[in-house]
Amino acid sequence: MTPEWLALDHAHVWHPYTQHGNTPDFLPVVRGEGTYLHLADGTRLLDAISSWWVNLHGHARPEIADAIAEQARTLEQVIFAGFAHEPAARLAAELVQVLPAGLTRVFFSDDGSTAVEAAVKMAIQLWAHRGERRPLVAALENAYHGDTFGAMSASASSVFTDPFSAHLFEVARLPDPSDGDVLSALDALIDRRGHELAAVIVEPLLLAAGGMRVWGEDALRGIRERTERAGVLLIADEVATGFGRTGPLFACGRAGVSPDILCMSKGITGGFLPLGATAVREEVFQAFVSPDRRRTFFHGHSYTANPVACAAARASLRITLSDACTRSRAEIESAHRAGLGRLAGHPRVSAPRVIGTVAAFDLAADAGYLSPIGRQLAEFAARQGVLLRPLGNVVYLMPPYCTTADEVAGVYDVVARFLDTL
Image 1 (spheres, rainbow, N blue to C red):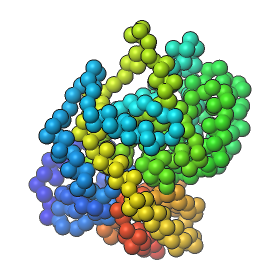
Image 2: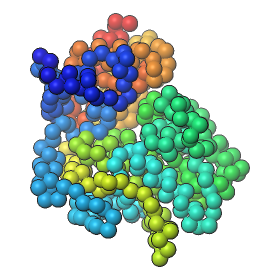
Image 3: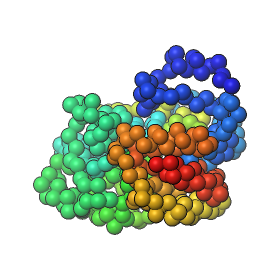
Image 4: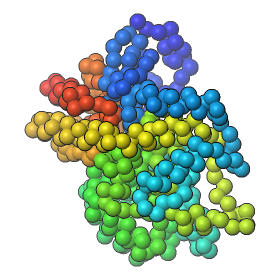
């Protein structure tokens, strides 16, 4: 049964990351529950990618829904310049308790890209307040930090950013640590242009949209040691990796690293509402505190620290910190290792990798985001009751934490059946 509103979608909606000239019919979702999305015709899809990595605990999780409803009946929105409210104050304090050591202040925004924009602007403006002009930011090859202009500048050149290349600011590009010597390159950059360098931004241990590239803790520690020694800020973009995706609550924790600035979004509200957050060390915050209003951080959004979103984030964090959630994440990681072990011998499968609840492998086919093999797998999986969205020829699984080991195994069964058709 096709719902009548789907015609309105076709007539009036412009979808993200979608070529409307060659996209098959959109799947009409009418309900979510736990690991599953329910379609209008009564079929259901196992959400093996957490609906673009945001849904931590399953769809329509009652504890988060209840927190949203209660907050919406009390205070739904207020300007956050000149006002304060309890949901934001308590969320900030609760985040500080679990963030890497030294991060004491939280700046709220709308999503991952805006969290990164805030971080980059903070870093550059901080140096201006110290009387130094440091316009340069260093970032990794194969990085992806978002779709706004500052975030695009920090991201690697790709089909996402190429149309805007003439409008992006200069970034010093460091090798992808998964296949290059990032530390020697950073040493050389600091020797040559350290006096211009405001910050280094990295996605710690997992270059997500750039191909689910896993890189090492030693490299992350080495970057932290070098930036600290040179007095350069380290920005950790944990938009994709935060809230338990790589095992510990934050990927930096795997390496025992504390950045100067840390960006969060995606899973922060458990997938219920948009919210971004940028946490900083106290000395970063204090660089903006002055009687001179010109030293203000002139940045913000209409929905900054939306009370309903903050209430959702607090409820999601409580679930994330529970022993049951920790056990579930460990079980998903074990299920990934078993599933990839079954696929590893296939001639079209290479570079299987797991970090926490994220698993990926490369599929022998045309490489890159536009490789048609990813779309073929996505369409095959949907017919088998599974939501997958490969990054071109990079296949990944990132399920909600409520997903059982048997359900994870079932997704690998679907992938194996697809491989048999090649």
